[in-house]
Amino acid sequence: MTVELLRSFFCWTAVCKIVFLSVIFFIFLITRNVIHLLHGRWFGISKETINAILYGAMAGYKLAIFAFFVMPYLALRFFM
Image (tube, rainbow, N blue to C red; front, side, top):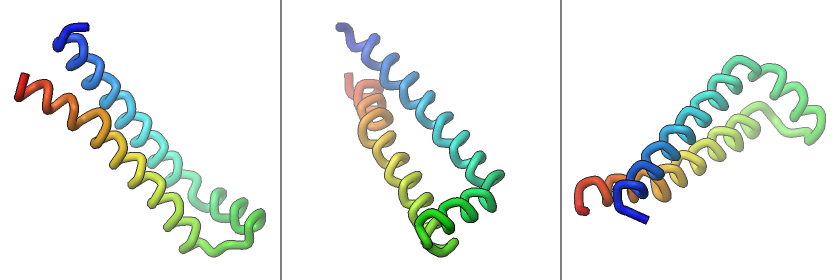
């Protein structure tokens, strides 16, 4: 496996995951009321708690993308 292949892999994987995260965020923005209604009924939690859970999950996913895909890409790009 060459360095160029690894660079390409990390770059395109990061791009795809960031696009996926953006799509999930916009779906959440569009369907926020439905999500609050359903999860509030199912689990009996408030809107603020639902928002905190969803935004926390998106933040964790974004951190994982940067730690496991963007940073290795940058390291290969600038130091190899």
